[in-house]
Length: 136
Length: 384
Image (cartoon, rainbow over all chains, first blue to last red; front, side, top):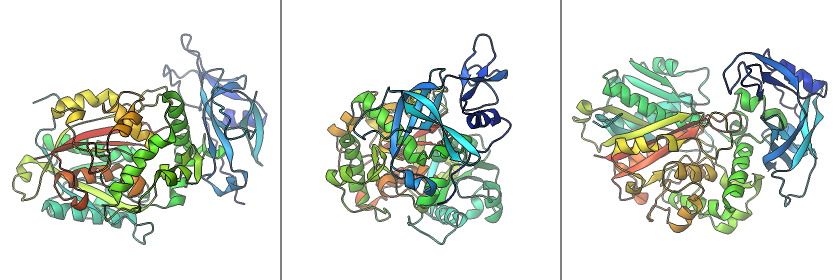
């Protein structure tokens, strides 16, 4: 089995990926007083007010499923043994949208839209954990 | 002159290579072939080209600049198509402005790729897809658009059969296109029961990645007037990027933001169009384009497709050559297959699939990154 695809860790996103390895979901937050919004994915400026004062904050790890798909044909051979699996678009309690995976394998006929989820950390690769979600 | 009119801009040639599942040809060779065919159909010589736009995912380490050097073209106008399937039309609009202003006279707009299923699945290097979707096994574009499709279905009460009707109509159009890769009839039963790729998307909701290229040639009224070939006018157009800025799931990419201006430039509205060439990476995006460009109200494209015949024999021909779903998606050329098809139809050269037509609309969409494609474009074309 080929190796899992890994993110490119860089100066912009390093705190996020290091947080995952500590089982912590850490997002950027805008420091502008009239904005204060949480940001994902990691950026060089706030995508809401374009301000540049960003800091890293631990967030709740709670959210709800906006939409999802059940992947039968993964984009990379390393995922073939896991298919089919759920890829989900999660709106985090703090606002941002995060793409992730569901640890559960519910029946395909069950509608998961709007379901609450909670973050768990998955040993994606020897060097990198990833935030997954389980049904709350 | 209407605000933003493209008066004086003519499309005088179009070319398409063979669409093939596999090829030994490189992308630059495909670019040359489509350009050569387009110039021949225009009656123009290579040495007359002074503007070039190239869109090609597999072009590196070549670029539009090195392609111009490779072909030994002296260019006053070069555009590197960076918006995926929205690039072709975007480059036509920019090329049209260059021609109007006298910055260039003969502009070739070409897209090409030598693609297969693995390149389709592995190509995206942008941070949104590569770093924030890829590690989770998101299923590439299929996974991204499966999520849009599910949300669209749940929001507007649409069934898979509704998307199937359009896929089946396009397959019937493809059966009349000798260059389409999928020509055999597609039944609703086959559509519904095809294998699941990324639920709710099944096999026939997904394009067939392939190898090929499409090109058109734009020129000024002065040059067009000496050419003894069928001519097409660029009547209007528009583009928008990253709309709406902070909403991935608006079920829109913004065609509604420029459609009124585009139709005002053209002097015609959606009801005056004799065909529609949509960017059909997935049927849900065709529905969203039909709504964005004013053919159906928001959420009502399913009714439009149900109540009209979308084949070349029908009253609302859509993707008259079969589109990317049935002719094939030659990578970035997916953004030009509709343009090529529209120009061919308006020249009256579409053979068995010819639609009786005076004008039509073409749309583009692409540059898929974090959860969606940020770029949308469209133009109205008419025969002279």
